[in-house]
Image (cartoon, rainbow, N blue to C red; front, side, top):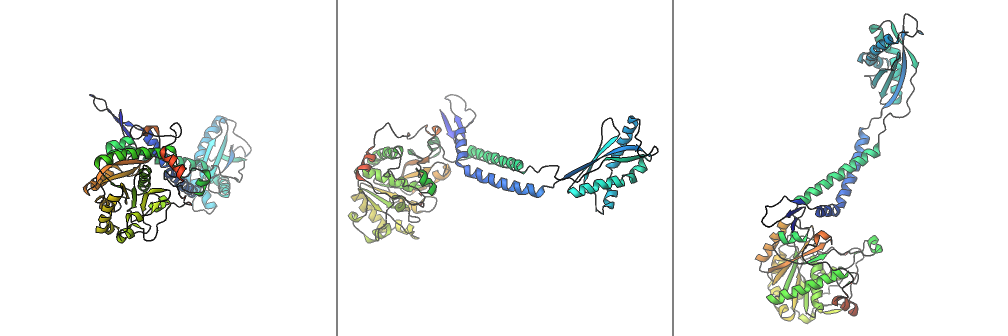
Length: 503
C-alpha cells in the first residue's frame, strides 16, 4: 500500500529497497482546482500587462514600392538593353546602389530629414532587366516621399558607378493606406495569458511536491503526532441557487434541515467514538481548538456538544474564544445580559440558570459577544477554575471552544482547565510542523491530546484510504438525530449573507 506525502506517493514493499517516489496526480490536480482564483488573477494581470506592453512597443510599418527598367543612356531613354544577361548583371549591381547608405543620405538631405527613416529592399525580377524597389517606413506619407526621393536622387550615385545606365520608372509608387504588418493584439495577449497560466500551474505543482500541508487522511496519519478521530467532509453552505446568488450562508449545525445525512451521520459516529474514549478515561471537560483561523473548530465544537446532548447527556457548551467570539453566530443565538461567560463566572450564578439551547434543554450555553482584552486573565482566574470545578459536578460533559493556538496563549490557559483536547485540522490549512508544535504545546499545558478531526475534506476517492468512511444520502434510513430534529423542531437562524467565518 502506498503512503501519500502531498504531491509524492512513496511505495513501500516488504523486504525490498525503497522505490523512487511517484507523483500523486490527484493531490496536484486538487491543489490546482483549489487555487483557481490565483490562476485567474494571474492570467488577468498577464493579459493587462501584455496589452499595455504590446501597444507601447508597437511601431506600425507602411510599405510602398516602385518598379524600374534598366536602360542604356547611350541608346536613349526608351531603349531597353537587348542582351538580358548583361542587363541582369548590371541590374544586380544597381541593387547595391539603391540600398547603399550614400543614396539614403542623399534622399534624407533632399527631404530635410536628420536621417533616412525606412528600410529599402531592391530585388531583380528573374530573367528581366527590371528592378523592384520597396520601402517600409513609420508613416504612409514618409514611405511615399522617400520612394520619390530615391527616384529623383538615384542618378547622383548610379552615374558614378555605372555611367552608361539609367533607371526609368515602370511603375510609380502609391501612398499606402494601412500598415504592412498587423499588430495581432488578440493573439499575442492570448499567448501571454496562456504562458502565465502554465507558469502559475507549474508553481502550484512544485508547491504540491514540496508542501507540508495536510491534504489527505494518510498525511494526517503519517505526519501528525496524534490519532485521527473523524473526517468531516466538505458541506456546502449555499445549497440553493437563490442563496448562492445572494451570498447567503446557512447554518452548519446538524440541527439545520438543509445539512446532508452524511454530515450529521459523521458527527453521530464521532460522538459514539468520543463517548467510548471519555468513559474509559473518566474525562468530562473537552476543549476544541485549531492551529489557524477558519479551520472550523467552532462549528465542530457546537455539533459535538449537540450530538452529546441528543444522547441524553447534560452538556455545557462554553465559548472561551474571548478574543473573537463566534459561537453565538454559529448557533444563531442571542447573548443575554449578564449571561456572557465572563459575567456569569464573576456573578457566581447557579448552573440551573445557564441559558439552554432552544428545543434542546439538555444543552446549556455560555457564550460571549464582545471581545475581551484581558481574556488570558479571565481564563486563568480563580473564579474560572472554581466554575469549571462546579460544572464537572453538575454536567456530564463540558465542551470548550478556544482561540486558535497560534494566535494567542488563551488555548494553553484553557488546556489547564480541560481534561483533554481535540484539534481541528482543515484540509490544506496548517502545515505539519505547525500542527505538531501546537500539539506539544497543549500537551505540556496539562490536557491530554485526545486526537484530531480532519475537517472540510473534499470527498475525492484518493482521500478515502483510511479514517472515517463517507456516509451518503439514501440507503441507511433515518438517523436518530434526524428523527429528533424533525420531531422537536429545533430553532436555527440563517444569516442574511454575513455569518462570520468559523474559527
